[in-house]
Image (cartoon, rainbow, N blue to C red; front, side):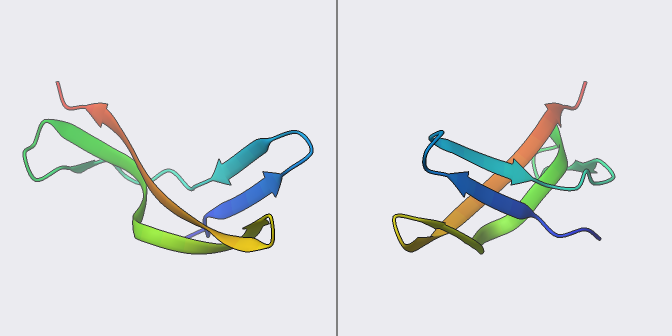
Length: 64
């Protein structure tokens, strides 16, 4: 599986997160399908004002 990549451009004031798409997996409630996740908080190598950036990501679609 590809790694999640986080970049910070302080001049442009942009945070970019690149995450691999997963095979859709139902949430516990079954109302949504997770398609990308960090599976909790992830401390990245990216820095903002000299401090490492931590990211928590969940991307999903409705399970209709």
